[in-house]
Image (cartoon, rainbow, N blue to C red):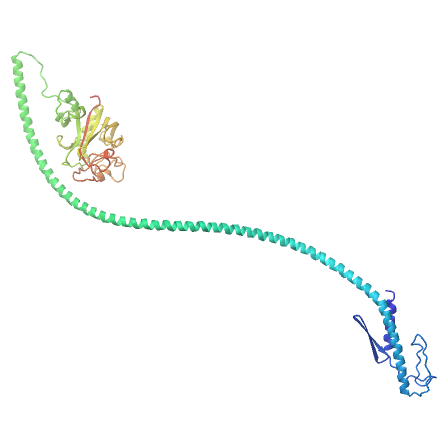
Length: 493
């Protein structure tokens, strides 16, 4: 680097020297190009050697050896020769300068080039290191992103599998629903068909029921006329019975007079006897030796008049006082509270003895109840209750029956104890439907219950309506009962 100022000084000297001339000289060194201006020699004075003689002593390293010439030179020739010498001298200087530049500048250029290469290499290495570090960071980020993408892809694949599984289940469910829907449609079609058939059948049954209703109305009218006839016959029979009783009384008096005559004749003194023995129930009549079933007079305590009852002396040991009996449907049992209180009907036929009579009879001592049943085919059954009585009217003739046994069902059809009596005009049941109105008759209904022996008597029906005679736990709700009897007897009989 110490020769660089010298080179610069020489270059400036050459450029200064050559700038005075108009001619140029260009030197190419590698990528560098050097241009020199050559001076022009003008107006030069003539020396001692002759006109336009230029000395080259300062331009050459060695003195010039001008050979004398005998040929006379013109001014132009002299000038041309001087220029040629000057050009040759400058060319030599330029060659030396070029050699110097090539020898000195080359090493410096190589050194600068090496330094530049080292600097560039270091820079490149630094840049490469930075790029490598950045590349590693980016590679790590890319790896993280790739792992996230793989995780997300795996999660999406799992979701896709789940969605596929769910879709498969839904498809199966849809297919099953479609199958069930087809089955339901088929069932619906069958139900509609059966409904149409049932509607036609019900219409036919309705027509038959309407016809039957008209027949029943005709039958009721006929029964009404028959009842009127029977009432007239009953009045006549009562009149005849009164006459017969009078005749019987006359005969009794005659017999007593004869017995008194016989007694007087035999001189037997006996105290006078009552003309009639009073019985409180049929069991006492049976104990008195009378074993023939029929109508007898009973005189109950606190009752001013005797009352006729039917005594059953053959069933289950006899001695039974009949409270209710039905056998042919000739008597209407859909009656008022007062009628059920006082009683109605004929003791020898269909009748109800009256709630007052039943209360007075069963409160005096402990009675048992026997219910006899017979269906339209002649099958018989019975229900027995060891303890039975009813309360007075102030408690609506509440029922009390305990210790059931018998053949008319495994369970008692009679309502539970404490149930009050109800009629069409005196509702005491626990149903808002008024069972006495709906089921007909007077009975201990509770909530309509499983029994009603005072319902309508149906004789010509294979299927008994709801308001018919019912003892549910014997043969269900559709059995047609042809005979019922309710009778009591002292428990100690």
